[in-house]
Each structure stands twice: as structure tokens, then as C-alpha cells.
Length: 410
Image (cartoon, rainbow, N blue to C red; front, side, top):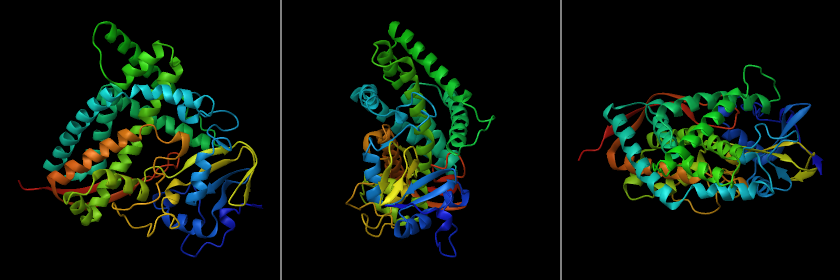
């Protein structure tokens, strides 16, 4: 057993600066760093000397850590950054709550959602096509994803826009806590406002149901679970907030990543037109260019990873995007191949905290790709490609992607 080396002490090649998990330039394109770490230092320390992060980059180590909920827990030693969130709960609280919340996604509700998402995809892409393209992030992916999440929750687009603003502030708060920085301007007030809004929305849903106006939305389902005592009020509105926070930014980025692949790899569009499975395309995108790059856990006790000592309480970042490019599990890992078979990717995480809304992201992206393949002759990059920078340094993708698009002839 040895101490994990510090990233800045490693003999990085001349064209690669030491891996810094808070460097925006590295966040924009970290894959060469990931490959070097997997080959030379599968566990490293980075960040502050008095509070290092442990970064884990190889597939087998990442999946083993995410599966082991006793050795690596979700809440930091001082308690969850935002109490009550499902993704920050550990056993024995996590399992029963997750099982209860899954009741909000009944087959009837999911079927209704699919029809609505199909309509939203057609509306927003056809409008983008008619304009000949533009910024695919602002002009297509963001309004589509906002429309989907508003439909699923049962809120208006205007309310979803307010929620997005609150989410951005809440993410800033979480990011400063992760870095150990106290920032008085990034407070938890926005998250409190989100929870108050969701609680009020559930109260309105209860009143509507009493008046005979039943809807199959997540808000209605969570309100029913709350009122029957299966969930506390904090658990119900906390999960609604989590679904919004996790569902709009990451899915928007993943949508843009798909469009970028289609624009820069014409064979991918032909593959879809020739009968390639949109679901397989989505899975390969989740492996090749996921919008979430790492999952943070905390060592519940002193332990080892790949022979390196990890002290109790230490934050461990499992680099799922690096695991997804590990040649030990994925031959020719840097190539996008929607026909790929083999090891499961970790694009939605792994273990008991695997993304609960993954079905919704898959649905939206699958319907999006099918509609694009049916309606679009060409997609090409026409201008700027602006990468994500900042936030909690967990996400990756493009915040702007200028495209030109041409409709297929009838």
C-alpha cells in the first residue's frame, strides 16, 4: 500500500499540464489527461494540500467503487451539502425511498410522456430546420429539454424558466462547497425557493385532484405519495427539485453532444437512416461523450484503491468518463461506434445511485435522433463550438454549437 501521488508531482508529457480538476481548459477536453492517468497513475491526489481529492480513472476501479456503498458513501463527513436529496442518501434510508419514488413513474404516466416528448421533438426540430439552423444549444436543445421536463413535472414553461435560474444559483452554491470556498453570494436561498415552489405545486395538484382534475404528472404522483405518508414533504419536493436539476442541464448537454457527432461525422447520420438503432446511438454517446464526467463519493473508512491508501472521510472522484474510454474494456475506445458491444458503460453512473431519470433522457434522445434522421438531409458545423466551463466541474459538453441544417426532400 502506498500514498497516491499528487498530480502536480507526476512526470506529465510536455504538451499536457498536470491534471487539475478545476482547470476550465482541461474541463473542455480532458480525454488525453484521462488516458495518461489510466496508463501511469490510476489513483492521484489533486486540489488543496489540506483537503485533497482522490481521482480514480480506470474502469474496474471506478465500477468497484461505485458498487461498494459501504466503503464509499454519498454524503460528506459533515452531512449532505443539501440535506434530503435522494442522491446524497446512503443505506438504510436510500433503498426504501428510491423504491417509493419509483412508483411516480407508472406505465400509464410513461406512455403519456412519450407521446408528449415526440410532439415536442417535432415542434422544436422542425422550427430549427425551417430557420436553416443556428445555435443548436439555445435554439433547439434547451427549449426541447425545458419543455420535456416541464411536461413530466406538470409545470408551465415560464415556471421551468424560473426553476432554471434557481438551479444555476444552487449549482454555484454546491460548486463553492465542493471546492471548500465560502462564497456569500452563492447561497442556498435559490434551492429553498425551488423547494417552496415544488411544495406549492403539489398542494395545487392535490386541490385539482379533489376537484376531479387528475393529471398523470410526476408532481401529482409525488403529491399522492406525500399525502399517503409514503414520503415526507421534504422528500417529495426534494426529489422533484432533483429531477429538474439533474434532468435539464445534463440532457441538454447530451443532446448537443449528439448533434455535434452528427455534424462532424456524416457517416453517423447515414447509419441512422440505414436503420441503425437510435437507442444504440444514445448508449454509445453516453460512453463516448457523456455530459457527466465524474461522481463524488466519500471514504466511509480508511481503505485502498488500486494499491493506494485513501483515508477515512476523503472525497473520491470516480471519473466515469475516463472509465468509459478504458481500452482494457472498450477496444479502440476513442472511436465512436454505435454498433459496439461488450462491457456496460458508466454514463449514468453505476450501483445503487445509477441515474433514476435515465429512462427519460434515453426517451428524449431516442425520439430526437429518429426524427432528425427522418427529416434532415445534412447537418454541419457552421460557426462556434463553445465548451462548458465552471459550475461544479462535473459536466462536459458544449454550451454553444452553431449548425447549418437542410431538410430532406419528400
